[in-house]
Length: 246
Image 1 (tube, helix red, strand yellow):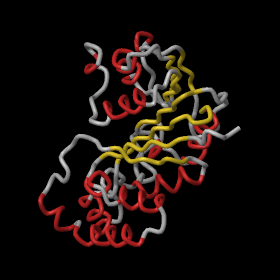
Image 2 (image 1 turned 90 degrees about the vertical axis):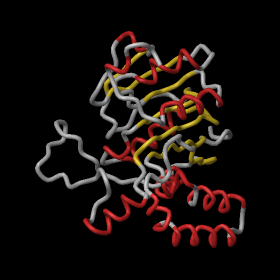
Image 3 (image 1 turned 60 degrees about the vertical axis):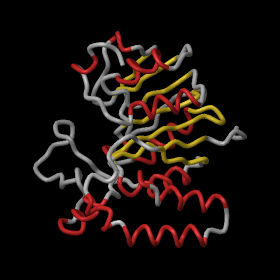
């Protein structure tokens, strides 16, 4: 990461995961939507080892001119993006839970990708057990408190809490395949009691895995029951647009 970037934005443990996916997929043209304050533009060109064309879409925040983007366009991601399907990859970090129309965004990014292109989404995970317990006791997940008393555009407002199965459902609905949950380097779980709370869920996932009738179903339950899905605070999910899509 470039020197001085810590003064502009915080560091999150999913950053290297996103970069590793882009590097492994050899993505030469990347759309960053939304690009925020530009962490990807600061990081990707220096570690990918490739000449990357990186375009950004600004929603509420915008990177400086020095951040490494070829272009940055202001656009409300609640409405469809009008970009041609020529990107090797599209990245959407920490935004899908802030939108009232997440399907519009996913469909737009699908259209922005070339056949075989990769979509990467990051969002807080609401399946870890402190969040589940808070939902049981209070009615809302950690980080997803009610909007009352807050104003859109002025306050940080979260709309939809996501888990891996929910993201899998959304991405499948819009035609994506090869949906993969990636591991994030973080303490999983943070508290010993979470191991005990997870036992019933673990047993359920194992039963579903044994009953799986296809490799696709087996892979889904294997990922749903993984440490990242059950105990992780972050979700980093990649998916591919079919290679034979016209």
